[in-house]
Amino acid sequence: MLKKKKIPQINYDKHLRDERRKKLKPHESDGEKVCKECQSSKHVTEFSIDMAYSDGLANKCKLCLNKSSKEYRRSNVEQALWSSRKYWANKNDVKFDLKISDIVIPAFCPILGIKLETGDHKSVESSPTLDRKIPSLGYVKGNVEVISHKANRMKSDMTVSDVESLLKYMKGN
Ligand SMILES: [Zn+2]
Image (cartoon, rainbow, N blue to C red; front, side, top):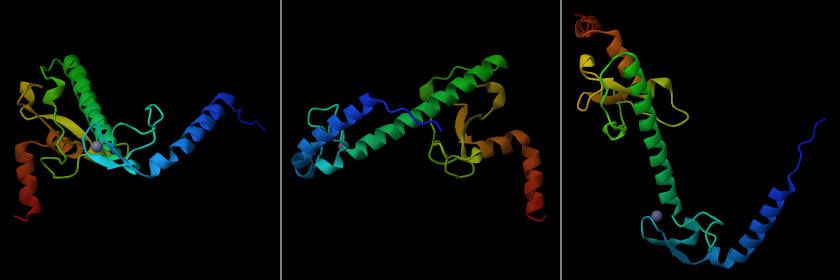
């Protein structure tokens, strides 16, 4: 049977970190630190351990760190939407003059009201997609909105009169 090789370097670093952590104990368990982001003084347990800093604690509190990583993920999603649509528009000869900042992902789909999910556990239906309000105008400022994949699919499958007929049928008239 194959055994995983141990890399001594990592163990050595871990040992060093444990030693430093031990030395930090009194400081860690008590005292306050000012968060660089929100500027508020918080108990040291509100900060993650980060050996990159001289006091062994991250310079931003856990809450701010969490928030900025969420924002980072979100801006990545906007960037991904932007580049994939730009590529598609270019290939299909559709006008495209958007900047990444023109793409704003709302919390909820403006059509269906479902939560737009950008995380790893998203379902396809709730993924944000970029919609052209008037398709022939292309991806230009003022003509785009981020809606759920589900709403976008429904929109592209049906014309206005299709929707009206479906609504009439579903309401039983
Ligand atoms: Zn903070």
